[in-house]
Structure formats: C-alpha cells, structure tokens
Amino acid sequence: MKSTALILAGGQGTRMKSALPKVLHPVAGKPMIVRIIESCRKADVNDIRVIVGHGQNLVKTVLEPLAIHTYVQINQLGTADAVKSADLDSIEDIVIIMNGDHPLISAQEIKNFISDFREQKLDVAVVTVELAEPGEFGRIIRNSNKQLVSIVEAKDASAETLKVKEINTGIYVAKAEVLQKYIPLIQNNNSKKEFYLTDLIDLGLKDGLKVQVLLSNNVDVAHGVNNQVELARATKKVFTQYANKLMEGGVIMIDPATCYIEESVIVGSGSVIYPNVFLRGKTAIGAFSVIESNCMISNSVIGDSVQIKAGSYIDEVIVKNNASVGPYARLRPETIIGESAHVGNFVEMKKVNFGKKSKAGHLTYLGDAEIGEEVNIGCGTITCNYSADKKKYKTVIGDRVFVGSNTQFVAPVTVGNDVLIASGTTVTKAIPDGALALSRTPQVNKEGYAQKLMKKTES
Image (tube, rainbow, N blue to C red):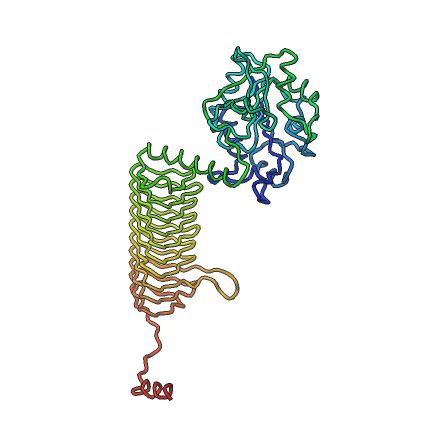
C-alpha cells in the first residue's frame, strides 16, 4: 500500500524576523523541514512531496541531496492552494498533509495516523490534540455522539467555543481521490481571499463522506514554530529528549539542562559530560571519557578514557585512547592525537599527526606536521608552515625528540629520532638522528650600560 506526504513549506514566516526561510531554521542542529522528511521516511511513507514558495531556491538546495520532489506554490493563496500545487492527479492511495514548521512530529506518530485512518476506513481525517491552553488554534466541535461537526477558527469562535480544549493540529489524512475531487471545489470566500484546507472537512461532511478526527495524546504534534521563541523551545525539547536517552544508556551528565548534544552524536557508557558542553555533527565519544565545561566538539572521534579539559574547541579531529587535551586547547581539522598523548593549555594544532605519548604542554602552534612518539614540545614552539609563496609546507619530527622552548621550525624540514633541540633554536635544515641542534646569537653583556640608559631616561 502506498502513502504520500505533502509537506507545506512555502510560507514567508515573517514572525521569524529572519531572511532565512522558516523551514530551514535549525532545530537542535538540523533544519526543521529535514526533521519532518526523516520522520516520514522512518514511517515508510513512499512518496514525499514538499510544496515550496518563499525562498524556494534555498529550500531546494537543501532538499535536492535528499532526493525530494518539490512543487512550487506560485502565489501564497492559502493551505488548500498549496496542496493543489502538488500534482494531485499523480497521487494514489493515502495522503498525509503536514506543515513544514512542525519539527517535533515523530515517525511513530505518522505511522499511527496512517494506520488508524486505514483501520477505520475513513475518507478524510484531521489530527487533533487536547491542550490546556488552546490559544489561537482552531477548535474541534463534536456533536452529542462525539462525531466531528466542524472546525471553528479561534478568531471566529464564541466565548463558549473557546472553552473547547481539542484543537486542529493542521495535520490531515485523506484518500487521494478525495483530494482530487474536493480540493478544486474549495472557495476563497473569506476576508483574506485565501483557500483554506479546513474547508475540506466541511465539504466532506456535507457530502456524507466518512470524516473523523484522529485524536493524539502527544501534544508535540501541535508544536508549530512561528517565531524564534518557539524555535528555541523546540530545540530545547529535542536536546532534553536526547540527553535523557544518553543517560538511560549510562552516560553521566552533571547538569543535562545545560548540555547541547545533537542526535547524531554517540557517547559511550560511563563517560562524564560536564555543564555547558556542545557536541555536534558526527561526533563519537568512547567509554569512560570526561568532557569538562565549556567545550565544543564537532565531527570528531574521541576514544576511551580521554579527558577533554575545560574550554577546548575541537573540530574534525581524532583523539585516541587515554589522551588528554586542554584546558583551552584548539584542535583543528585533520588532526590526530595519539594514545596517551597530552595537549595542554593554549595549544593549537591543525593537520597534525601527534604521536603516542607525545606532549605539548602549553602555548604552542603546530600545523602541517608529522610528530613521532614520546616527543616533548616545549612552550612557545611554532611550526612556520605558511611561506611567502602562499603555500604550506610540512614539518616531520621523529620519535623521542626533545624540543626546547621557543623553537621555530621553518618548513619544509625533517628532524630525526632521539634529537635534542636547544631552546630558542630556529630550525631551517634537516637534523640527523641523535644530534643536538642549536642556533643562537652569542650573548653580549655591556656592563654599566643599563644604568647609563636609565639616567638618560630620567633626565
């Protein structure tokens, strides 16, 4: 059996106060339209069609890699007009219609709506939910037999009708042939001259179709995003749900309310996440690791028993087992930190393979470098990888090398194994195994000169 999802994503979203199309605003790191599409696919919806309008070129750019069919609503003439734009004649069987700004709808909910619709052998259905504070949602009016009578918009409702708690979520399920017949019959006899999808319910009831509500017990299906406040609430909801899932799997979170972990992130059992941590993208953290406060980690692999100390920023990096990083370290793309290695405070690396048990304690920049095992990098060391010809060159350092403080490596340069480099050295040529490298200007002491200089300054 086939099912089709029509996702309405053409609105301007003026209340977002943003140039970005509303449906592309991220909820917990993922555009809300993408979240809805993923839920549809997990619910085994065969055909997904997105109706675009405002900002359509940008929306299409996001959807094309997902192999989604898009249909253009040329003018913003209401929800029924949007549905009409989706080439209804080519649709078969069951259709679920959703808004592109309802990012919290789950695959299970979609699957349940379609399943219930089939089991009850309905022609048209509207998904409803009961809210303690229905606000501006349209109210569901039932008769004494609990059958659906109509949907009344809040602005048109009487004081008595406004007391109704059951509301229209804006989600509809219908047979394809019902849409094909009745959508063209919907009129725009209203103050805004728009074609409203709610009229489909009235037309179906008048013609004696089997029209009913699908009452959901999950209030999230009614969570639309119309402004930045609602966007933040949706994001917080997703982060909270995923934090709970991680904790159920054995992750220790000191204060989950202040942690922001995207659903694509994997965290091993026994790992500890401190407050104010942001984990993004395709990040994986092993077991028994510690991520201290104010760290941001993106698209990185962190091994087992690793300590990432406070304030560290890590992007597209591999940190192997038992290593420690930070505090206040910055590890940039294509960097690999070896097992039991130590990267200290105010150390920056980019495109570095940092060997097993090597150390860079503090105040160091290493870029485009291959560094061996058990290497000690002294404070203030720099690889001068960017040349005047605007090209980058590589530094290669062997195993068990001691690099004194304030050393500069002018790349390209190679250092052998078991080398000792004196503090303050500028390395401009290869150093063989076991050698001592030393380059310093001889120190000159001029006795009494400081006193003479001070007297001149005072006068």
